Length: 188
Image 1 (cartoon, helix red, strand yellow):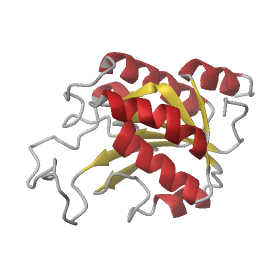
Image 2: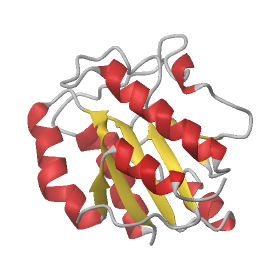
Image 3: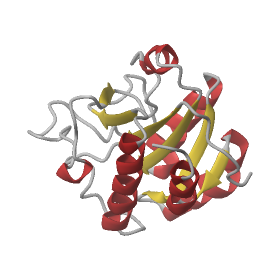
Image 4: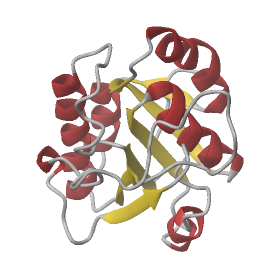
């Protein structure tokens, strides 16, 4: 579904743009993803809409066929947000230990207490952290928008699959510029 509207109470969810993740070999230049994310952060803050910075500090404890990517203890500074995000004291910070930001974090209750009805999701990795967070938001009853040019993945096939097959079933997709234009039409 193409991007049509943003609810008055929309939050921006920034997934895993942190020092321990940002250096991974991704398919789209990370500098462009960060630049677009920062543009969204700036307009959300200017409109006094919630900005949620999400980092990952571990993985779910269950067995899988592949070894876990995150092992404890994590390197020093791994969970620190990149400076380009310009973290502020009024940003909501969520530390997750699963792919999605809603599982076991209290994020759903916090957003609903603020009256948030919609989320815009950006970050890395498209096929894991971003997709899982979007799925959980959708399942929690939020309208979901995905800024498809403000995300990337290490796996081209996962990125393409999410954009083509998963995201249209979870919400609306659009570019950073389309989202900014919708927000810019509102009075500050």
